[in-house]
Image (cartoon, rainbow, N blue to C red):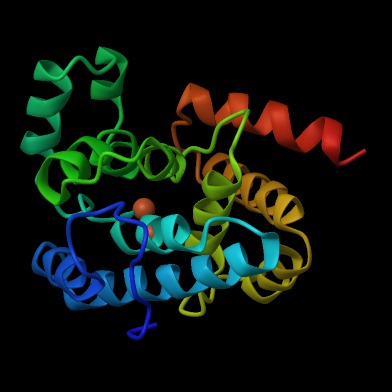
Length: 200
Ligand SMILES: [Fe+2]
Ligand SMILES: [Fe+2]
């Protein structure tokens, strides 16, 4: 997707400049994941009639904060008005919900559609915009993912975006429960809104 050109003035950078900023904050493998999520988000946006540029930017920056130290997140949670309940969780939740704060601050992205998609990419939400759904699913099915069921998830998502969202929520919850992991309450809200009623 190196030929993708930003035209909507959503960010004060060219794509190459934004790519360089994201790369500087991440390991090589995490950065490459971001490029694959960007490409997958573009594909899903085209298929679903969504704003391709917003989807692309959300995909590229979504894990920007993933490798910041815990202390940096804790400091931001305490000083930037986040729900203190977040302190009971960790990077897996923080890099989305709190990561959007760093993306706005460091990358000068003030677009709420993009920031919300980043906030929701780790936990989903009962109501998700098209861009939220695209990022959520692109992160899960990008071609580097090879968990059991990845191919089925990919096919489901490419055929029907909302079905891809439901597939991912069910899969993630199942994984967390089987591993006896703590579940962030909003993740359960996401599950209740998407899976039981829609799967009937
Ligand atoms: Fe992430
Ligand atoms: Fe990711």
